[in-house]
Length: 324
Image (tube, rainbow, N blue to C red; front, top):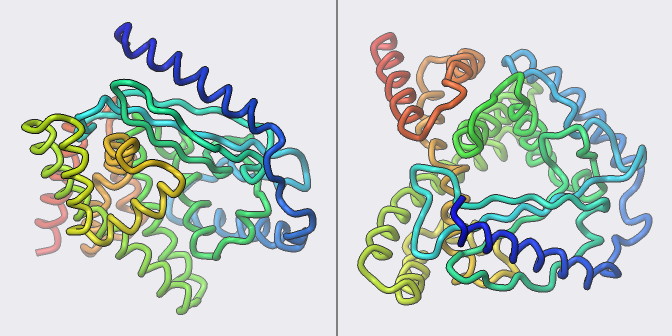
């Protein structure tokens, strides 16, 4: 890490600390708003989903292994910083940080993230992550069953026993696999209505992936030729040409300034959706999901984007030949 990046990271860390200090008495979740029954139901769901996941070769982890009724939750604040005027198209975001908070996210409200000179900044809060310290919170228990199933499978896929890859490559592999496994779960349960919802979410992810990859190419050209501030506005204006991605972008940056988050948000999303379309396309071949997962588990642990691209292309060729 060069000196300027180190200074930006250190300054930003101090800013985040001050934000939390100023918000120590922020809003609390309404007592009794969610019932203990909802937490128990979600705990049972987790066990059922994990039993199914094992049939696909997804080994269970300790993530979401308890509820907030059994102890305190650890909430996470994730931050991504990308050098202004650049995108992490074939590499990880320039700077990633995570701050752990010993409370559920509803109890800590961020008022503002200040601009860091030379960097775009995007943040996200959440209680679901691949770690034994994560707990089922009331807000997670209140979410729709399709999202809960997807999250359970996604976080288990992150376990080192399943995938142990560089962050950006692992997210790009795990995200589509979690969505595919959720569809299979509801098919297995004979739940046609939720299978339809899970399929719709999968289809939306594919569209986001297609649009994001095209947008990123256009954005890189604009950033190459135009001054940064002008380029930001041009790229933001392009979003309307990509409605599926624009909807997700706007929904996920609520409370954040679009021009401030732009490069970091696009780079973050590339990490999650870079291979979404490619992996779902592979799954459409006469190829069982457990076989696809087993194939992807052979990705080299130190895989770069270039290595992953070649690996997926080889799988495409392999199963194109065997299914003719």
